[in-house]
Length: 428
Ligand code: CMC
Image (tube, rainbow, N blue to C red; front, side, top):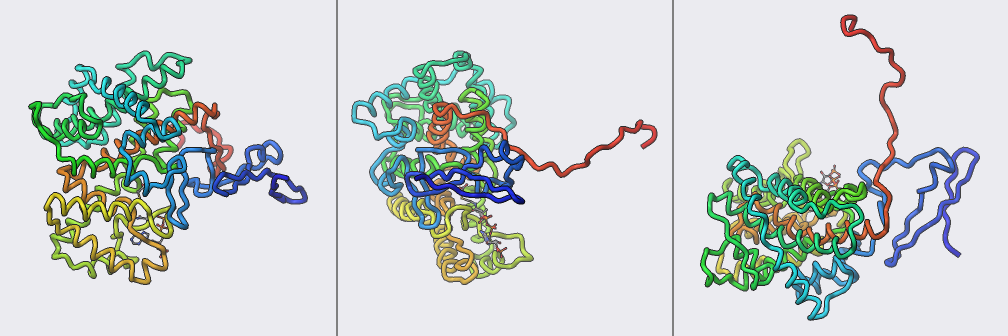
C-alpha cells in the first residue's frame, strides 16, 4: 500500500500522498492541499520544494553523487564526449555509433548563423559583458527562425530547432569572443567535431590547416560534460518555467542564460579566478585570506567553496582538480594561482570553521584555472558554463513539454497593506 502523510490543522486532518522516486527520495504531494484546506505552503527560495518529477539528472548532495540518466558523472567525464552526453541528456539513452554520427552530422550542418546577426555585434558597446550579448543573441535566434514560433510544432520540427540551437550556440559563443578582440569572425569548419570546431572558431587562424591541440579539446570536452546538467537549479528552473507558458525554445534558453549570469550561480567561476589573482598580487599569504573568510565582520568569502546542495564533496570538483593538474602539465604551464588554490584548499579542509560548516571546493574552484590555461579571458567563463549547460536546459525544456506540465505559477502569502482610501495628490 502506498504511503500517506497526515497534516493536522486545528481539528482537521488531511491525508497527503507520498511520492517515491527511483533513488528512494520521498516527497509529500501537496498539490490538492489548497483545494482541501485553503492553505498554501511557504518555502522561500524553494529550498525544500520539488517543482517537478524528472528522469534526467539525479544528485545526492549528502554523499556527493551526480548521475545523468543513471550514468555516473565520473564514467561520463572519463569516457564520453560532450556531444555524446548531449544526446544522452536530450534523448534519454547513450547513442549507438550510427545515431551519434547522424546527430553530429545534423548539428554540423546548422552551424552557420544568419549573416544579418553579425550586425548585432556592431551595436554592443566594446567591453560589454559576453553574457549580456549571449542572452540577447540566443533570444534573437527566434526572430531569425519564424518557423519555431508556429503553434503545434511536430516532434520533428521541435527536434530541428534543438539541433539548430546546439549548432548555432557554439558559433555565437566563439564570435562573441572574436568580436571582443576586434578580430574578424571565423566561420565553422563542419568536418571537425563539435568541440574542435568551437575551439577552432575561437582560437584558430583563418586557414584550413590550423590544428587544434587534442589535449585542449579533451579538456574542453570534460569541462562541458561536467556542466551539462544539474537538475532543478536556478537557471534550469527558469528555463522550465518560461517554457511552461509555451514560450519558444530560444526565448526559454535565453532566460536561462540570464539566470545563470549571477555570481551566486554560474558567475562564481569568474569570481574565483579574480580572487586567486588578488591573493597572488597581495603576496600569496593564504592564511591571511582564510582568516578573512572566517571573520564575520569581513564580507570576504572563499569563492568556489561551499554549495547549497553538496554537503560532503562536489563530485565535479574532484574530477576538475585532477583534470587541472593533467592539463597544466601537458601544456607545460606553471600557474601560480593553481598553487595558491591548492594551498587554500588544504588549509580550509583542515580548519574547523570549514569542516564544521561542511564547506568544500565546488565545481568552480578549479574550472577557471583550466579556462585560463586554455586561453579564455575571465569574462568568458560564465558563457562557457552556458555552452556546457545547454543540453541540460534543452532536455529539461523537452521533458517539461512531454509531461504536459501546467504553466508555472507559484502562490504567495500577501503581507502588504490591506484596504486604503485613495487621496487626491494635492492632499498627500
Ligand atoms: N567562505 C566562508 N564562509 C562561508 C562560505 C565561504 N565560501 N560559504 C558559506 N560560508 C559560511 C557562512 O558564512 C555561514 O556561516 P555561519 O553559519 O557562521 O553564519 C555558513 O557557512 C553557511 O553558509 P550559507 O551562506 O548559509 O550557505 P548556503 O548553502 O546558503 O550558500 C553558497 C551556499 C554556495 C552560496 C555559499 O557557500 C557561497 O557563497 N560560496 C561562495 C560562492 C560560490 O562559490 N558559489 C558557487 C556555487 S557552485 C556553482 C553553481 O552550482 O551555480
